[in-house]
Length: 124
Image (cartoon, rainbow, N blue to C red):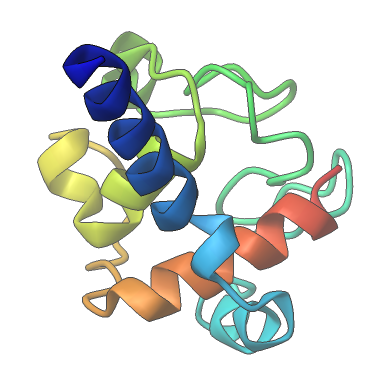
């Protein structure tokens, strides 16, 4: 019984903590996206200085069509998820050394959570 109790407690903790977007507010995330929209768009195929973010969740880094990525981003082969995007948005050059992305990152966890919630909705 002790093991079942420990499992139930673990499941409860996981459910209570939720994913990145569970803690995020998409409306606030749209405002955070203002920091990104000079280089990125959420419209499919609309590349700017950076690639379109449409369909980013589940995509592999460096794989969007018709965009010239840095060799570092192509070689990284990161499967973009809430977790990997959160790490990237914290400090892009730490996760992908050599990336062309000049953005320093979002220091505040809440800003990243809000942005991820927005991107989940806007990039479907």
